[in-house]
Every structure is written in structure tokens, then in C-alpha cells.
Image (cartoon, rainbow, N blue to C red; front, side):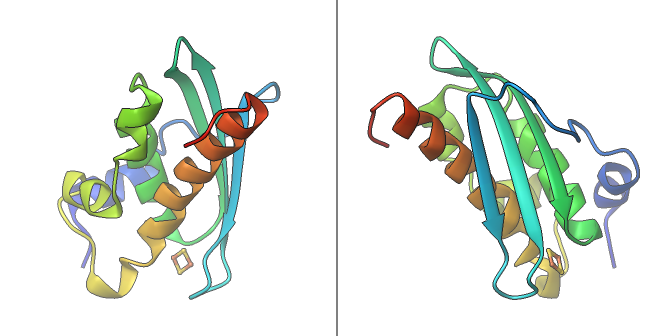
Length: 125
Ligand code: FES
């Protein structure tokens, strides 16, 4: 049901945890299942220099968040905002259709964290 890549990111999640002095925080919930996601970002020169996640979500949410952080790290804010749940799923070699909604948490959380950062700086998305 799950690709080897999904299982690897579920068993060994990258960038899991919290950034206490984060520049932006995104907190989102999944209306389908009620699970929650927190994304923390550090920004320097318009680039995501660090990103971490904490989730009360399922295994697919953990794997997609882990992959999303790998895709987003080092990107400019504009590049990071273009990352879609489809990008995350294809880099994980696919997700079962019933689990696609879980990948929304990762990308929605990323976008919310960037918006939070831009708001604090008085900038627009
Ligand atoms: Fe809730 Fe996957 S079932 S995030």
C-alpha cells in the first residue's frame, strides 16, 4: 500500500521537532480527520534556512511533512510557496488515494508559516 520512500520517511522523519525562536509558525488542522500540524521556519535573506514540524497526524502526515521539509529547506519563500501536495506525493513515489488529504497538512502548514512570517514583517504573500 505504501512505497518504500513513504515508509522510510515515516520511520526516520527528517526535521521533526520545534524551533523555539522560529521566525514564522504555521498551525493548521485537517478538516477531513481533525489531525493537527505545526510548522516552524527560520528565514534568512528571503530563504528558508531551517524548517521543522510537529504533528498529531497519521503515518502519511509524518512522511509527507518530512518530505515537504526536505523540499522546502534552502528554497526562497517564493519557491517554497509553489510546493504542492502533488510535488510532495510524487517525491514519495505516490500515496494511496485515501491518504492524499493527509499531504494537505504539510503544504498548508508550510504556506501558513510563510504567511505568518510575512505578516510579522508587514509584507504581503
Ligand atoms: Fe489525519 Fe492522515 S488521517 S492526517
